[in-house]
Image: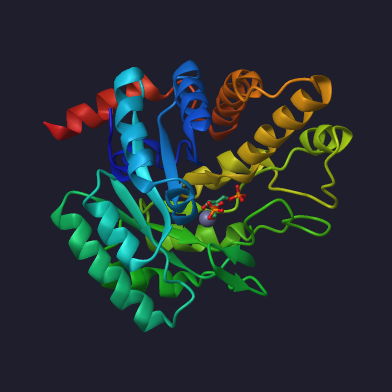
Length: 316
Ligand code: G3H
Ligand code: 13P
Ligand code: ZN
């Protein structure tokens, strides 16, 4: 069942967070759906501009519709990750139930203006919108920020009122990719707390939330990789963030690490092999297992029947 992120957030708010997983291909799609069905979790499929450009955007859209038929138990949103205005407009008309407009690198007023245009177009089609205020250190799609630009709670309130966006990505010290922290992680939960005080019930989003498991990195390196100094977000923080209004937690890098480990180990152990289906058959269940375990940490595992009933009751 394809739903909006807003519907998912209404069920999750204050209790658990929904996993928002970036995918790019068929094997990830199958593993993602299987893992969420196995763990009985509602979820969000995230498609980035990079993913849409990798093979063909229409292929991804068709895969989502087909996955909905293959997995009738799945309850999920189809979400554009880090969209610009033009891509948002395209997705609003291409079967996405949710889009992210990321104009957070621009001055506040311009961010409001662009976000509002996307919100108006999206809402007219029943599509919901995530926006962003503040900037994550490092790379967000094609924009690079040298330092964290933390979200200011007072600006968040003004921004949400002015744009009518349905959820907000807040910059609290996470970053994209596999190299998040030097030394201790310092997440600014005080920012979440202050936003929640000002806007109780309003859903927040945490980007850059992969945990970068050290055992996964060690296996990759033992199989010929060279990833040094990698670190991620402590997953024991997820439920605390959920209590403070975080309803969506974005995970891409951890899934890439699973892919990398499976493929490196497969070809190390089977140097005579060249059939792509060999590692693919290992990857799909491994990715499903990874998703199911992540959903337990997010608190979304086991929530799907209740979420479906809640969403259906609120439609009536
Ligand atoms: O936030 C970025 C996501 O991890 C997507 O990455 O643009 O390389 O597909 P990508
Ligand atoms: P990670 O790189 O931590 O997986 O974050 C992904 C993300 O925020 C996608 O928008
Ligand atoms: Zn992101």
